[in-house]
Amino acid sequence: MSPRLILVTGGAGFIGSNIVAELAADPDLDIVVCDHLRAAALGKWRNLAKHPIVDFIPPDDLFAWLAGRGADVATIIHMGAVSSTTEADADLIMSTNFALSRDLFAWCAAKGRRLIWASSGATYGDGSAGFDDEDDLASLAALRPLNAYGWSKALFDLHAAREAARGRAPRQWTGLKFFNVYGPNEAHKGAMASVIAQMWPDVASGAPVKLFRSYKPGVPDGGQKRDFIYVRDVARAVAWLLRAGEVNGVFNLGSGAARTFEDLARALFKAAGRTSSIDYVEMPANLRGRYQYFTQARMERLRAAGYVEPFASLEEGVADYVESFLAAPDPYR
Image (tube, rainbow, N blue to C red; front, side, top):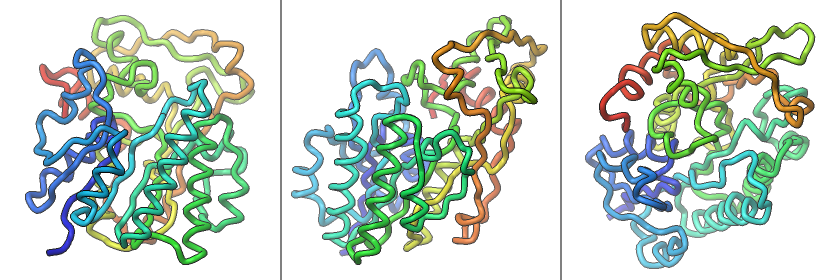
């Protein structure tokens, strides 16, 4: 009998739980989640409550579990990470984001299993060199992230590509550089939740939302741009990778369209049925010199690999997020 379990690390988190939701709809798949749930009051467990999973593993027990059940695992979808760009403990970031990823990569290579992992648009640093996701060794080594989180992700992407070049890769090895993901199941993230989730209480109460002023000539207040991608589209892309088989390399995953924070705020007010009201506030001085004014994923390589599904526009994604989740009695997917 061939392996059929799909192991999702970080599977109770924001992106991970949306991937679990997408995959659990397939009755032929058995999903195992590895994660921390923390305090019940945090509500992270509710990210999984609607979906059948066959096992739940505390992260400290992961390799012991693999030693006993690894023969049944077909694919590891590795979303577990320290995802805060402001995390001060660089040792924690490296042990979680790099060392664990390295060890899972080696396990999958040794066992002939598939690995899909979360990289990040943060690997591009200030974006001055563009957002081209060429994954040859020279291109990956040339990236200069701005924080320890981005560096840990870039370092593992490079490690994976080097191991593949040496003939020591898993059966499938696919890294996805997520850009600005938003959508349901992010309430537990607090200050690291998407701007939409942070704006929603003000929009719902009728208060103005706050956006940073611009400190860059030619960019108006609220005119800073990001590539916002709805988490539903991320989960669908991961599900496609499972079906597509051996799509190898490191790829961007964004909508491919940069939109302003003002566009985002106006889409949110429209979805809520309210008149837009925006206040522009001073950006903290410590952010001004390292603030990104533009991100936009180049999506040609993933398209060339065969992914043809359309991505939701900002307006479509925000409307669904509000109507189906933020304004609904049950906001969990």
